[in-house]
Amino acid sequence: MNSIVQALEGGAARMESAAGLAALEELRVELLGRKGILADAGKVMAKLPAEDRAAAGKLLNAAKQKLEAIYEARKAGFASEALSRKLEAEWLDLSTPARGVAPGHLHPITQIQTEIEDLFVSMGFAVLDGPEVETEWNNFDALNIPPTHPARDMQDTFYLEGGNLPRTHTSGVQIRYLEAHKDDLPARIIAPGKVYRNEDEDARHSWSFYQIEGLVVDRGISLADLKGTLETMMKGVLGPESEIRLRPNYFPY
Image (spheres, rainbow, N blue to C red):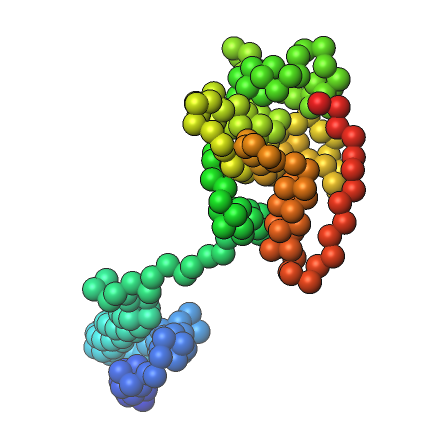
């Protein structure tokens, strides 16, 4: 029995110096497990004379309590160390200056729209904006597109309550400008923006897209001015060496 007690005391010293939680758990199984030294000691004690069992029982019980106390203390210590390492790894200094917001990028459509706007401003045009939900008058009627006009079919669109509609072009901006500045001419404006139509979606068509319309009202204006303006815009976007070809098309306005 003395050798068993010495083995348990040696186990206590080994627990005190265990290098980690895994090693500590191995020692617990070796010393206090169901097949450990303490369990074997109980079998040996059963073979002792009756007068020696009480003293042996006290020794084994004291050894067990000591081992359990050491085990729980070391286990709590390892857990505390692990928590400290975790907290240290996750620690944030809230007084540290922020890294700042990484700058993003403008959408390609926004970039080209801004580039075209700058080109027209350099040619003396004003850049105007207008509501994306228009009245039927500004969107169609004031442009000589009455309800029976074939252009209505080409711009079949959605209607909202009250007779308004998402604009099918930015021409409504021109109407608004002329009504407000009919006594303040000549005029040179462009109206860029998003428009909406009831389109069948494919690679070249969408129910919403961007458009830039221009308006010039002055004396002596001809198609030559329109041609020169369009060529200046396209060469400004594509480069001064670009070859531009103008081709007529049919729009039933």
